[in-house]
Length: 596
Image (cartoon, rainbow, N blue to C red; front, side, top):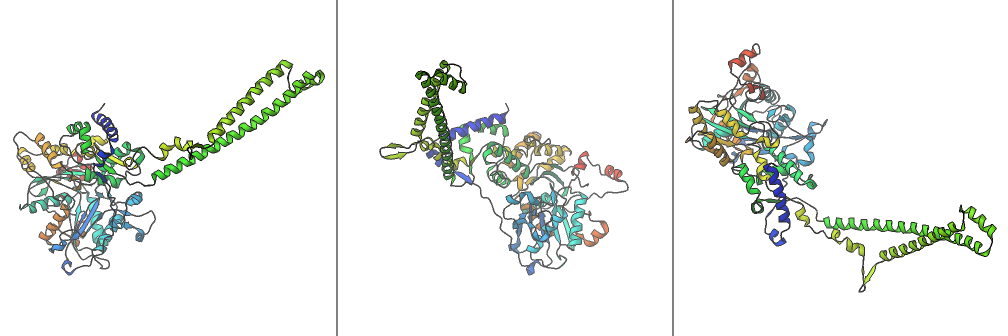
């Protein structure tokens, strides 16, 4: 038996032990509850005079989109809009019937109609992306007809395929008529922001471990530029972790499968999960009942307080059905008893003919009854008499059981006494609707380091980091590990920094030095970095793409800067020689470099 299976069995035994404890002891434990966040519609902001011709910063994530102004005003230092980058649009519906972002108050009823502009982290659906931009521009107060007179700073994934960038540029320049646009990697914007915050002057060398909703990346930055050839992607993020947690709890609580929704699992993942310093040692701790009792999180599912009433109604319905069945059976027994008594009287009348000496009439009656002799008649009369007596006794017994018993002047229904355990349940209804989240707190986020736990045949994040480091000489490895940044919405678990430090200590040579830092706000750091870059690099300078550049060099063109991808143009006449010239690895076809 595997270690996890043993832990699961021990965890179930611990739950049974805890369930048998006294109510007073249970009352001392803290029971968490799901927030079930409901989105509120975003207000439509008025365009202020300070924001005229200022850049708009859009952190266009595959899970969440953040938008705001790159303006020096203190009140605009944070994004004005933070919403889920998805649209609820049924097939054949008009654009006016589509709901975007925070206009969708509750995602769960509409989850199967949600549409995203991304496949994992790559842009594939421009129609949904256009709805997202419409939502952003409308709520930021931009009401110019047919064009947007503001430069745009837009984030894109590492090693973005050229075709995806071409679709985005075509949408921005052709549909919205923006004057200029710049693209940058969200993880590199976060790296740039942390360098500025720590008072360091770019360019800088370091490693960025970025983990989002769909996938995670290892991004080596050398002298302020992304080494696109050696950056790698792991197809594990917050979304697969939440789906894995949902599967674990649905298997553990099959009676609550509908209540274990993906939105609740995302809340559970980010508020109750943590990264273990040593995964197997942590599982060994969970095998102890004392540790389980102390660390398990009991999360209350919503339930109706009318459960007892439902049980009473169900019990009453069963009692009525049983009473009707008994009445039907008694009626049938009475009919059968009447038939037997009538036949018995007939046979006794034939026997009296024999006693009176009417032999001729007696033999004629025997022939009508299909009998051969008086002995057979006597035997049949005896059997029928016994049967009639038994039917009478049975009927008397059942009638006495159906009548209410009188005890000290109070009427007591015997069926109610037998079913009292159903009417008044012996278990706590609220506790029945609780999730005991034990080892799942560790197992769900652990797939970031061990994707094999959920059946993914790929390297974990730290194995990928080790593979990336091996591509460089020792002196450059030393420079990279001295500045390791953890960023992204899926890098906010408690204990993740200590786990990465422990793994790096095992990877690096003896007495080597490294430093691991964690972004202050993993979800907003990339937007802050993009805003800081736009403030330090005015539009029209290096890194910006003008409409003239778009028309002359194509939609896939990228003006490189410290937080952007590496632009590797493709020579369509000789693609093979171009690939050989750039020394691309074998993983280039799996979006590890900026080649579509």
